[in-house]
Amino acid sequence: EDVLQELAERGIINRRRDQRLEWKQPAKMAWELQRDEIDIDIEDCSVGGLKITSPKAIPDNIRLRIRIHMDDEGEAILSARSVWQSQQDDCFQAGLAFTTREVPPIVTRMLAGGTAEEPAWSAARQPAMRRSVLVAAVIVVLGLALRQIGVWG
Image (tube, rainbow, N blue to C red):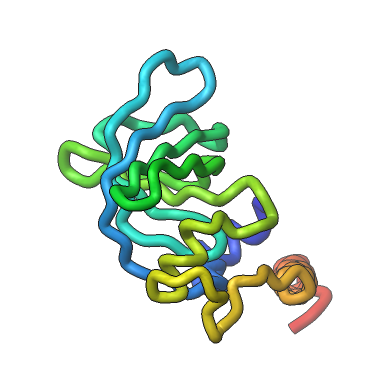
């Protein structure tokens, strides 16, 4: 994970592997050892997670519960973990990754244009692709390390 983060910060790889869709939706969120829920706004979603705006800083790499009230469908509960965070004026934007392999049904419907059908670009995660990116990242890091010690290039 640290290697991938370093490569992304250097602009060598783009860690975003999933198409994102704007989804303006108020929700409630809580995390471990927090007594009360806080109001958040969902900004966008993908098969891998959400981007949210929060009035409160979110602890790093913590499990979160997001509760979304949908007028016609009742309530949806999503499980995620915090991945990144940045402060924007008086609030915080954060990237959250879903903690399950299955894409939550409410997100699948949003990505498919409001239906329960799977979108044409496929909401299924691509574990083989993820492994390929990891292998490529390791090769790049190895090349950078060999170059740094003067063994290569």
